[in-house]
Amino acid sequence: MRADHEGITVLNRRPARAAAVASLAALALLSGCTAWVPEEWREASAPPADPTLPACVVPDGRDLAPEDGALLGVNVEWGSQTLEDVAAAWGERPAVAVSFTDIPLDATDVENVTAAGEQVRDGGGVLLLTLEPVGGLATVTEPVIDDLVGVLSQINATGVPVVVRFAHEMNGSWYAWGHQPIAYVTAFREVASAVHQGAPGSAMMWAPNSGNGYPFPEGVSTAQPGTEDHAALDTDGDGELTAADDPYAPYYPGDDVVDWVGMSMYHWGDAHPWGENEVPEDGKLVAELTGTYDGRGGDHTGVPDFHQEYGVERGKPVAVPETAALVVPGADLTPELELEIKQAWWRQVLDPELVEQLPQVRMINWFEWVKEEAEVGTTVDWGVTTDPAIAEAFTAELPAWAVYGEATERCAAA
View (cartoon, rainbow, N blue to C red):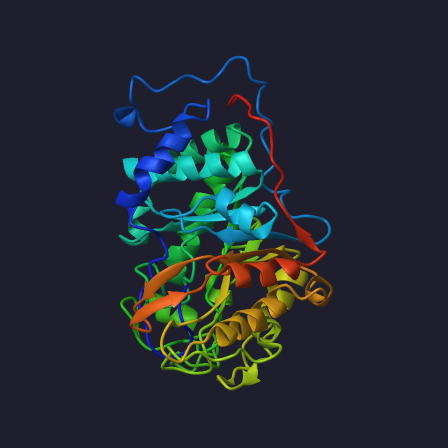
């Protein structure tokens, strides 16, 4: 998640690992399935799978998009809530749970990812795993990919499908893997090839940042003039990176390796600097997905129509992996204003006509976090379950097109 336009700050959505590891690892051990870890991390006392349970059905990772409607899921604040907590607040089981992890995976990452998969299996649904190569794309080596595939295959073997969102927002320069289209495409294709072959219960998602404000102010990985990356990004050939250059195409890895396309969609406010509690404009979500936004945040009608080009024309299911509206607790925030802001956004996200207007949209995940945001210098309440009155209003407007998770019986990993 990152605010568009001005200002570049890495925003970490993952909870502090130390707070989450113990509870999540315990959930994994209760599952009846043995979690995969590299041999040097494996504990000899790990319990074996229960032989009395039926064998798990391994899902087909490339067949996860529903024929009708869209999967409605959640970005869980794993350190302080569970999927059951969200299900209780919604009155429905989220169909998708989003989790973040660094890659290469260390022992803690493996425990967290495996345990997140266990929660998803209990509730029924899909794990959306976002992989962040914080050490740069060069760290995503063949052994690292092999380790990842081993984890995914074991999660799949428990009956849980996984959508892998690899190195998201790669068209920005605020991450170590950004503005490097040549290395990015190569890395994505290598990961995808291994995942498709070794963990067929998993799928690959390509998810750039919204092109509004592209090419964005300079960041830690801005492509420099004279480099191959700069030349690849200069799609109009004028020697400069400007708003006239395509913010998506240079980073696209290819139809043969991409199963889903996605784009995070947040209402940060009207314009930078962020931090004011402002009610979203009508139609903002659809306009940003279709390259037709011209409003209080500026004229971005030169941005390509993401839904049309990558959803309709390429036949890929479109996801909104993260979405929410900014609310900053403070003296100016009343309960009425908080409801107005969040409701104005979720009425766009949950619009009963959304999947008819954008027929390739097949997944939407609410960002259910309360967290410090460096972009605004204070805590932001993105959630809809933190206040019972807001939760009640949200659930009252859940759309008929929403596809939810269904509780499943336990099974033994294949």
